[in-house]
Image (cartoon, rainbow, N blue to C red):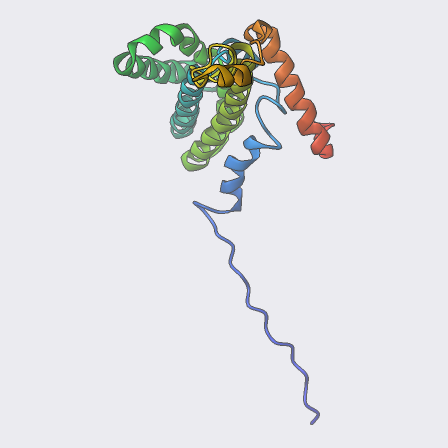
Length: 236
């Protein structure tokens, strides 16, 4: 009998599965790039215009949105089988409002000055369409763990754009970063006349402080992303 040639058996590589599989990783990475809630979905623009005049408030708002988005997703996912369809949006608003209240109380206790500066904007998180959208589109149809990751990913994607816009607006609008004067005649790093001449070449442009500047910066970010990723052009 002739020998039958046999192929060496290939060893199947087992891909990581829940809770850290490929699908779970994409829930965090997609909103950072190809499915960003601001530059791709064009959501949350109003808050991006209002709070991005300085870096520190933008970071605080970003952390607050990540917290509210993640844990509201978890709570709605846990309750989704018990929520009547007729009142689901009311329940979602109640959950979001409760978490926003927690954020307000913690911020008020930790840093009252920052709380006074951001109290109005923190309250507006309740109406942030990104959070409501994720509750309706994702948390109502997925388990708590995936919903949590989805909330973290979308919160990070939203916060990342906010911080980028805030850095540009504060740097070019006020000549500072996180409240520290970097460029301009009164820079804290201008220790002598030579340093003052070097750092004082730029006169801060107050136009960057106004909301239209944020819209312009976001538009440029959208243009850059869609120019770099041609497959995003047809995404609405």
